[in-house]
Amino acid sequence: MKNDKKNYYRVNEQIRVKEVRIVSDNGSTVVPTRQALDMARSQGVDLVEISPNAQPPVCRLIDYSKFLYQQKKRAKELKAKQVKQEVKEIRFGPQTDDHDYNFKLKHAKEFLEEGNKVRAFVFFRGRSILFKEQGEVLLLRFANDLEEYGKVEQMPALEGKKMFLYLSPKKAGVAKKSQQKMDRERREAEAKAQSAAGEADAMPAGGGLFANAKNGADALKKLNEGNDAE
Picture 1 (cartoon, helix red, strand yellow):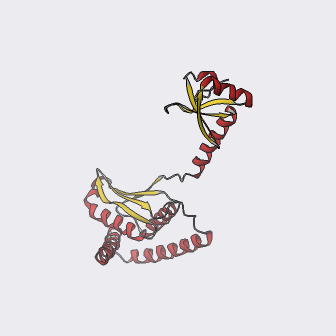
Picture 2: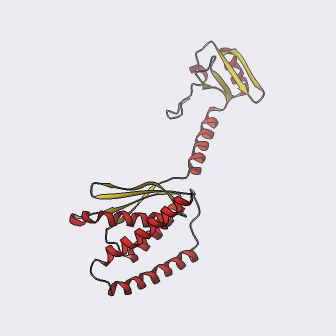
Picture 3: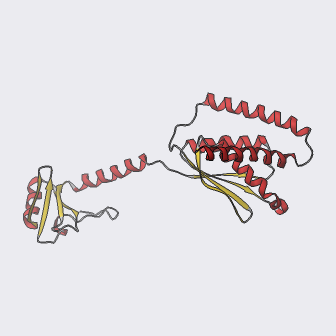
């Protein structure tokens, strides 16, 4: 009989110990290996060693081909039941405007609802590293806006030219939102973006940084108030 290299079990004459323990639904019994082989032949099945390190080794009288099939089927079912968790990245610039922010916030909510982790970061290009404080408050705002969906694993931390924030889902494997709810949130985000664009026209240069700092400061204040309440 051809052996499965991935799921290797000693079978029949490959079992060369003096005695084995035969287990079945009715219990177990220790018999000489030769007697166990005769029992397998009389029943038209195989003697399969399922626990070689036991004393004596544990065997079953079963159809080996069917046994391997059931093992593979069980492994496939277990794999299908596992919730695959991925780490999704969200990238910001220090001068991210509200429209772009809301767009990325929407995706982050979806990622967390699907049971994935989120790694958000602000990338500082060139001299923009001078505005690392604005990057920090932007990430704090982001964490605050996602508090219903995820929990902070790591607060904003600067690593080279990137400042990272790590979030994990509060509830893994939650079903995605309905299309109706997603459309409603999209319309709300667009309305906010239009409002922000109107305010930006009246704002001096650097308004993006100012808006991020203000919103981030509000988020930090809210987080601190939540911590005080706890």
